Image (tube, rainbow, N blue to C red):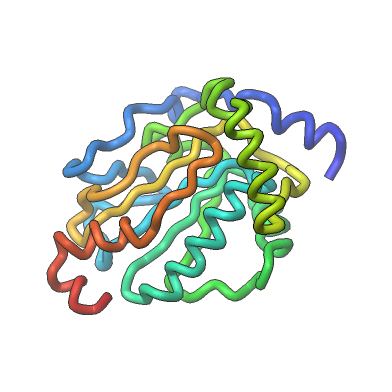
Amino acid sequence: MTFHQELSSWFVPQPTTTTNPSSSPALGQLAPKTPNLDLSSPSEPTILVFLRHCGCPFAEKTFLNLRQAAKRHKSVAFTAISHSSAAATQTWLDSLPQAGSESANLEVLVDEGLEVYGAWGLGASSYAHVVSPWALYSVWRLGREEGIWNRPTESGSRWQMGGWFGVDGEGVVRWGRAARSADEIPNFEEGVEAIASVTPSSQAKL
């Protein structure tokens, strides 16, 4: 990791004509389709997490919680989406506690071009979203209470908005939204419950 890489993480991500964010899907709508992620007719319910940059302590906490949820709910598919490069994402994953302990129903998708982020309505966040006094305090509290601090950022933008969604077995969005602030951590048990409540055949297996 170089000083230039760390500095670049403070640049606002620039959308292209194919990644310019649309609106996030409302509950009850079909999941957006992209070449890299098509949940229009999945064989199993899916929880999606769009991470902030690899190195962000809130992204780390979110991923660790996702990993635990995936171990508890083996019949649900879990996908973490990173906009950092494939190499930076793997370096970050290798640096996490209990690296390599992910269950088979958890995958990590690299979306460096922000195509999937854009399709789900996740663009650049505001100044208040990232560096509000409360967000900065939350960074300190997470480090103090759980030992999760900033890690080196090799690629990706600190301004990229994160989010989370739950898609049922028919490809319909049943849970989730864009993050309202950088420090917001989703409750994955709520997501699994929302998916199961509308897919009886899946609910029996959870």
